[in-house]
Amino acid sequence: MGKVLVAYSTWAGATHQVAEEIVKELNKKNLQVNIAAAKDVKTISEYQAVVLGTSIHAGQMTGDFKKFLKRFYKDLATKKTAFFVVCFNMIEDNDKNRVETLAWLNKTISKFSDIKPVSIGLFAGAAVTESDEFNRLNVLIKKLIESMKKSMDAERGKSDFREWEKIHAWATELVEKIS
Image (cartoon, rainbow, N blue to C red):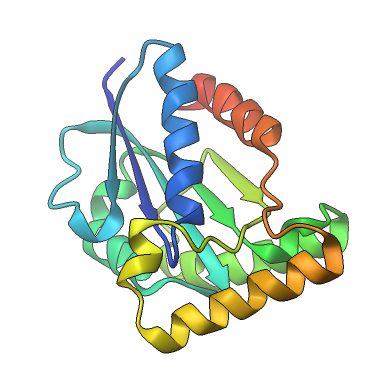
């Protein structure tokens, strides 16, 4: 088995944390895995497989996710590639929300039709206010996230809807698909 890259594009850090959990699961299967922010990846030539994650906000992928696809689409078309999405739309994992979330993702990845993902993971998000990524955001975006967190905590009793068991299960199933 060759090397695997888990690259992520995050807004405030929730997708980064999901990527770290995916890496832990892949490491349990003795894969050689590297993790990096999508914006920091210079080459993917040394990897047999790439797992690329993004958050979705207002139906849009992050800019770094789109840039990664543009930069590496020719190489990704020749590698085993998987995508994962972290999105509040997936708080309720039902057919309607899956279809809608996949449509948002497909709006971006359909432009790169040579990339044939071996798997796509759809995961609920979190309003993260304690991370390096959050600390680097501008004041207005921080206020927006803090407001979202406060609202979710008041309305739903929590602001982190990530289902770690689901994420771990997806990563475990992914091993066979990228090996």
